[in-house]
Amino acid sequence: MEFLKRRKVLAVLIPCTVAVLLIGAYLFQPWRLFTSSTLNEALPEAVPAASSPSNATGVSPSGPTESMQPTATAAAPASEAAPIVVAKGDFQSQEHPTSGTASLLRLADGTQLLRLENLASSDGPDVKIWLSELDAGGDWFKYRGGKYVDLGLIKATHGTHNYVIPAGADLSGLDTVVLWCDRFSVAFGSAALV
Image (tube, rainbow, N blue to C red; front, side, top):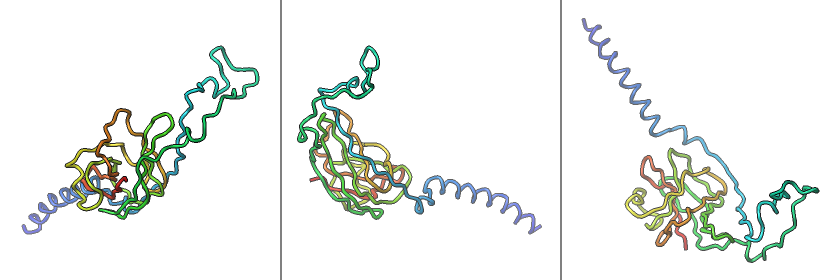
């Protein structure tokens, strides 16, 4: 009789334990403690307003040119093509060790982008790049409470990558870059842009 009771308890306990382990694995994704990724993107170049796609490719609206060589165009002055650093700051660790530099840049065509350089952080589920109005550092959980712009999922845990800021985004007061784990509402690290 005692054996049957134990068997019934195990019949309930084992599936419940397996379910809890599977849910925990899905939510926490513990294998990410041992994974990382690296991406090194070049700084995008703005196309000078004087050139057109037909000039850049050697193809005119009426068809390919005889030589198939790109048509020469007047080069933009070097100062016009260089990106302008609007603000810059170094990452500080919060929930996970994080280092590197964040720069808010304005390209020659007016596009704004956030460039993370020499980033080193941890992998995690649903990690995003946010521009926030709250100060860098301190409480890991505070950033959900303030105004922010979500620039999307982090491209890699290490390296140098670019995140285009949506046209028309109101960046006033958003002077902190946050590596934000949306699933658990914690900051892996943050950088004050000054």
